[in-house]
Length: 266
Ligand SMILES: C[S@@+](CC[C@H](N)C(=O)[O-])C[C@H]1O[C@@H](n2cnc3c(N)ncnc32)[C@H](O)[C@@H]1O
Image 1 (cartoon, rainbow, N blue to C red):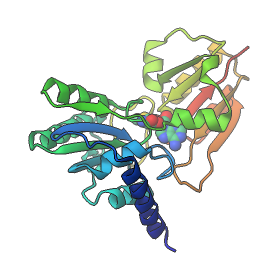
Image 2 (image 1 turned 60 degrees about the horizontal axis):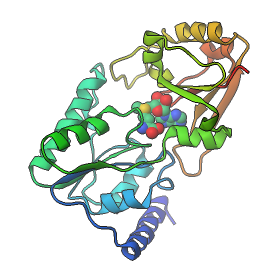
Image 3 (image 1 turned 45 degrees about the horizontal axis):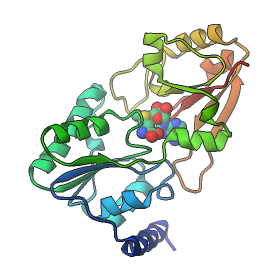
Image 4 (image 1 turned 180 degrees about the vertical axis):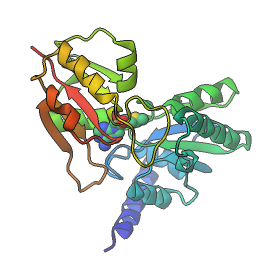
């Protein structure tokens, strides 16, 4: 059986489950923002599937082909907003374009759903902003949680954020120099795009990364072990987990999906 057929079967089974639960569809017009998880298909929540299935307009920012196929199987009207990204353009302009597209669907009176990968409220500007703007314009709007990269990291690396966990976007961490609690975990997001405000499909200039590494080496020590982490986007894939001394990080291979975990020093 082809993988897409398996996906359609899975979507049909989920549909039957939803029929049994009979969720109440959101009013029209309204905005529901959902997360689709990191690992394609398998981390969709039932309430996100129900919202997407009943959407009159389903706009998404996924970028993972298997997940996009699954969304089409759930709702044939699914349409990507990733074409709003353009090389060299500030990502904040693209995010504004996404918010405007969602608002335009609401103005047309549609039951609108926006789907973002991971948790839609974790390091994702257009999701929070579209909920804010929809409410300000008088439309009902809500956000449903999803499984974020941090959730996958806790599971794959066996750490408990309850032991203490600080999380920062890498560029903002460099610019703000917040006080760091060395007895807690430190999670740094977007290290693979550090220092870049624009979208670059051909790869990012990571010349600021060694500056971040110097800062971490001073806070901890150059030999303190950190972990580069990438959860698999593929349901049958394995996470990338690379543990190395902070001093070795500049030679590590980074991608836009890399997250850095620095465990407590004590
Ligand atoms: C714009 S944020 C989106 C996060 C997403 N909303 C979530 O809930 O995980 C992008 C950053 O999330 C992290 N990220 C995204 N995918 C990841 C993955 N597969 N494994 C580890 N971290 C990931 C990386 O730090 C990446 O730079």
